[in-house]
Image 1: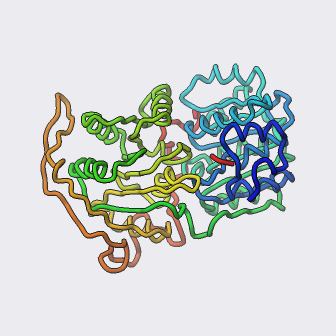
Image 2 (image 1 turned 30 degrees about the vertical axis):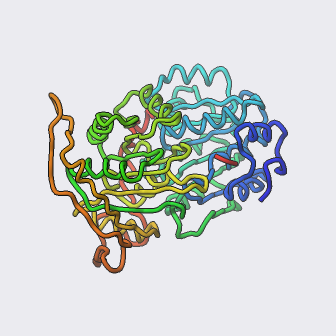
Image 3 (image 1 turned 30 degrees about the horizontal axis):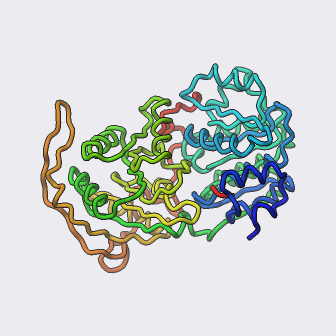
Length: 441
């Protein structure tokens, strides 16, 4: 593998990469660099956590001609990912005087319009907010030369297909289009057919059947209801995770977990769509800077690139295969090792069997003694209340074959013949943004 200093890049760009502590490219970065520099349209399938952000930012900045007219547009599914990509763009382009702007719902559109009016080279944004800015005449895409669809499969899941198409038809066809995705559903092939050049290149990093990196250990525990709080404390005591995201399915549950960990003197942050943008940004900053735990809803399940996350706990089981993949992909990034634990109740058994098969992973049953925590106090209005119950134990075993869940014909409610279940494209995004207001190199 080549070193950064050996790559065909401008001296300023190499210097920026070195200042970021980047000395060698990852596989996706090395394989996509030359095709993008050659001006090819590229579709990249690569697992989360492999360094895709720099894979498109570096060659775009290499080719970019600074004019303070918008030359590159990077479309992402969530505001958190938009901020993250914009931060990397600012750091990478600082020595080259490349100016970037981030636009997303939930922040002042007037401030974003002012930033655009002052002139920028790169715009990073969510589809809904970009449409709003275009309708107001504040976002002019006529000089755009490069378009990136980052986390394309997630944008389709969130119902942004029509918005993406509206943005693409507003950009001159002479553009270079780059599409990055963890999986390749049929809708992405349709976008490629209609909005990319016929000679576009497809690059697959890793095996086709792999959707998560192979450095994650996948575990589960049979536990449900209030006893999950005791099991969570037992897990933390037994494994001492260095940096951990704990996922809940609702804001209320996330806040309850947050309160329990805080009452046990743990350094914990909270992230969900009901918080103001300022509070969400502060939570992310504090977690990046050293907080040990973050309690989050699915707003954090895709796109966030935070270093050294060792553990993912699915306090509430994910609702489908892709959601599981997105969550656990927050750990074991850039070749590091990670650990994932999912609390499983009776109604989730079939779903977890499907996750194991479709994500091509092996789930192991984890046995933890959490008797010491079974009478912990849970917060409620007016104070805390105690709860008890019988602790649950089990043997450690592979989540298939002997001792695993029985494979039933027809699968479970989230199974669809041939791959992941696709959900309603027109639903609102889970991060609270309405559709029209919306690593190492």
